[in-house]
Amino acid sequence: MNGIWLRGAAQLLGVFALAAAARAQAPVLEPAPQGTDATELSRRAAAALVGERTYLEAVLSVGEAGSATPEDVVLRGWYDRGSAQSFLRVLAPPREAGTGVLRLPPVVWRYAPRDEEIESLTPDELRAPWLGTLFRLSDLLDPLAGLGRAPAELLGVDTAPEAQGGERAFVIALRQPAEAGGGRVIAWLGASRATPQRLDWRDAQDALLATMRFDDVREVGGRAVPHRWTLTRTAEPKHVSRLELREIRFDPAFDDAIFTTRQLLQRGAAPAGAAQGARLPAPGGSPP
Image 1 (tube, one colour):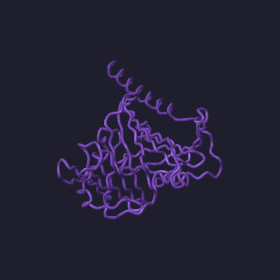
Image 2: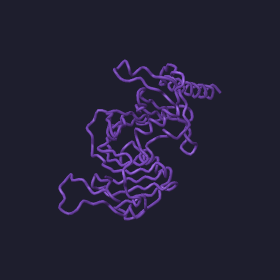
Image 3: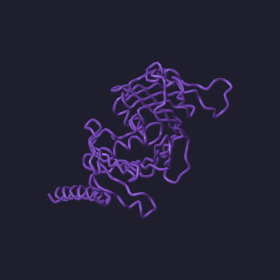
Image 4: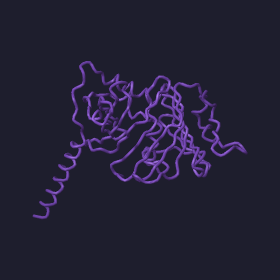
């Protein structure tokens, strides 16, 4: 009887400890100025990451904190915000080059040149780590995490970054849909231009799952765009993955044929005799 009571008490203490840890991670916020609109902040933050149409080229890296970076993943991405269609093409490393992922809601298709086949992906596959990184395909096919779309709640202003010479941030909460596991995303947005600084994913019990930090902000077409995205996950504290933008173009003209299953079969191989490191022609028509 005593053993059962002790086990029950230990479980209860564990629940209290998790709740205390979640509360400890929450920042102390000041009230936001009257009239601050969380929905408008969310919309402006989304515009720093994607346009109505977006083309990008990026490098993904993964490794233990403080360790040398192993082989990088180089990819291109095309996004159409209105239709929620997106297409990713892997350029490197060589063993993964030519891999394509196409999102035609509600289906996501993948083509792997090694297998010479196209397959549809399950929700679990979309949420699994991709190519050895902490990023999931769901993170890359829809990088907004609800910004500009999900119901937004204003939590306050975080002034802590000012102590390190940074910019204070508005903090908003984005409620996540049940099919995405529920919970919410807490977003830190720079006070001057609502540029994303940080995203925290929390589950339905408000426990921290993952954090994305944004820095290396550069001006692109009148937008303040973070060019380095650093991802950590609570379950893997020794690992970190980064996405670094080589290039991003907002609202370019590109071919709608990109968003077709036929496009998956075009591997985008370099032409014979091409110099190492030469840029490959973009499939479906190169953005201007």
